[in-house]
Image 1 (cartoon, rainbow, N blue to C red):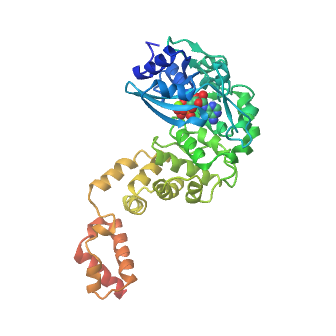
Image 2 (image 1 turned 30 degrees about the horizontal axis):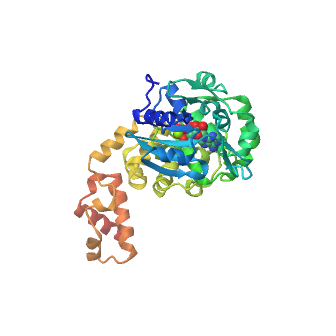
Image 3 (image 1 turned 90 degrees about the vertical axis):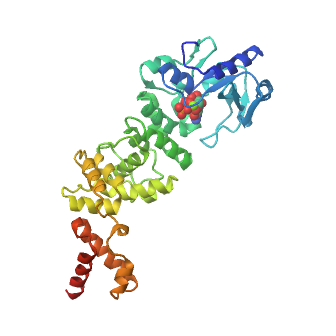
Length: 388
Ligand code: ATP
Ligand code: MG
């Protein structure tokens, strides 16, 4: 294992389990990522040791999921999730096994895992245990279920979302039998909690080709008016808010959702993302203006970031630098930078809601021509208004 990028602390955990007579292996995503030369998100170890045996071996442990046999171990500056080999009992809710049983057989543990590329284990010497052909599938960039795909998606419908997520993240194709089984079992997606869908969608949207998010959207009948077809809007840079706005714009364009707000709320998205998409999606869907006065109005109304996002979705390479120039010019873009304020208007006899309306009219004029943001000029404009 020396040539692989496994942290010393993680190796130490394997070593100590092993020395105490408990077979122990790296397993799942960390093996897959190590083989791909990617940095794993987290380190998972599977072992024949029971949770209490693991806890007895290390000073710092947290019983993260004792029911499922998982203990988090902190050791040598690293941390790993150490889980007892297990096999899953029957699934009746299409999400979680009703019960799990511990086993002393590694292959049984590997066979409950979702995809062949996630069902490999590695021992301390770096030997790969790969009973389902994960390494071959990794080389052929083919995501394939372990065992009968229909059965695996019926057990746990979240795996359908994970399939598209891994395909996107790892840039893999989905094996035909696995893909067909997703199509057949798409109706089971309603058993998956919105929070889990949100997480998988987010990871997919942040992947280099986020188009798999549109495939995932075909699983979202519970949240959509109709299923989307393929995507056509150019994808913006991989920042989360931009990608959510892109996704919502696609769904709006294809009449799958009525508004980004209701859709994102149903997926438990955070308020900042919802607010951003409300501003950016209408901009993505309408041609952006050519002229600076109109551009200034858009920035004032929707925010510079929403304009930048929309520019990327419309391949308008000229716009970002123009947005930057407008921002750097110091031109007034909101009421707080207007050369008159409410008190000035009160002095002229304005009261109540009329003050706000007048200020907005003045801001409109200033957005069209920033040079008129001078007190005298604005007050004159008001006088002309009231006489006209
Ligand atoms: P990443 O951590 O990069 O998101 P991962 O493959 O490590 O990907 P985890 O959710 O951390 O995914 O799970 C670790 C391992 O547990 C997986 O590689 C897989 O072997 C197994 N696993 C996780 N979720 C499921 C599931 N829903 N069904 C079957 N096996 C699963
Ligand atoms: Mg992981």
